[in-house]
Amino acid sequence: MDDVTTFDVERVRLDLENGICLISGADDEEEPAGYFIIQIEKGDPDGPIIEIFGEDLTQADGVANLEMGARYLLFTFDPQSPIGAEMPRVRIESRTEIPEGVHTRLSVAFGKRAKRVW
Image 1: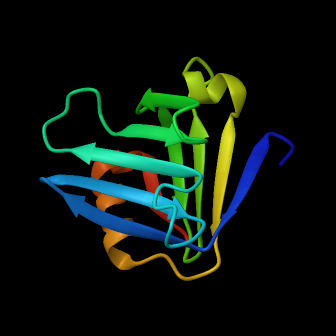
Image 2: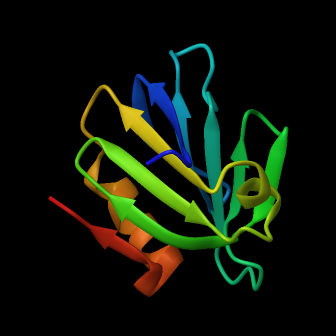
């Protein structure tokens, strides 16, 4: 898996704010966005907004595949997308179990591209 960029986070959490679902990997309580954030707005035709490295790399969707484990998320990005051009695959490793609400929201947002593997 040479093309995988891995980030370790304390936890992956779900925040609901003004009808927007925010899924973030946080280093600690002081830094809610941490290394990545996924923003899901109902009815957004461009799909979820994905941000990695705190706005250095941001794109609307571009996810080719999402594998979800109990403690990790493995994104495979379209190589033509801004993130995919830099990092074809991104694995988020959580030190704690990822809550069911996060898995559910990601499954809905990414549909058939998302699969659970535990």
